[in-house]
Length: 260
Picture 1 (cartoon, rainbow, N blue to C red):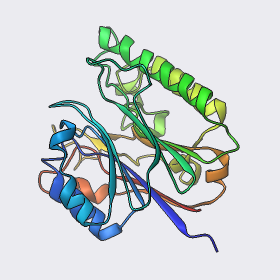
Picture 2 (picture 1 turned 180 degrees about the vertical axis):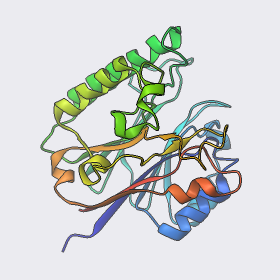
Picture 3 (picture 1 turned 60 degrees about the vertical axis):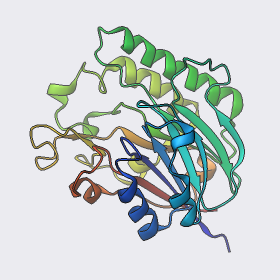
Picture 4 (picture 1 turned 90 degrees about the vertical axis):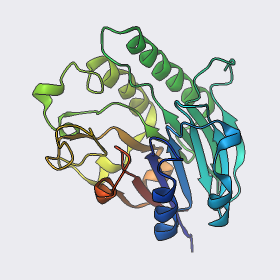
């Protein structure tokens, strides 16, 4: 019989600050694959030893202070790819991919965009366009692929605490939603939404204004998969309770498990 494969995405908002949280979570749940965003550490400073001690390999693509992505796996990491393939020395490190047990996993940390009238917003849309082109060029809908990460965008009214307040703002702007919708249309399934049609399930809460306690959040961390994975899904859930921990990241893990 097939054995389950659990894939997690988590923006840890600094792996060194959140290392004990990460190690505890890995030890408690033992996921097969943990995709991290916003590690905020250069590769030579990445805390490999305690992660390896738990039985994980790591593919890392980081930079000092900002951004950074990593894939941790209890299984061999094959065909690791860093960035879009055209990254220069000043390129922000936001994309990493690897194959685990036959599943291609693409881990993305999409730029926030700052504000719709900011040059950074145009950079965000450009990143999403490059991501869509990369997936179209290198993936097939009849093969198992998971696109995961902090997309910094909620897709519909169920994914924001207030559509009235958020409409047209960064993380809920129609241009962002349109860009991501092209990926879904290509042939991806929003795994959490496929199983949970209800509103009010969020993966990020601001540190200010008691946002977590008031559930003023956004669902911006995603696991999107091709049909060969979606049809084998066992569960997909958001670990909301992780946000209640002392010195928690403002994001929480999103977890999907498949027969593989």
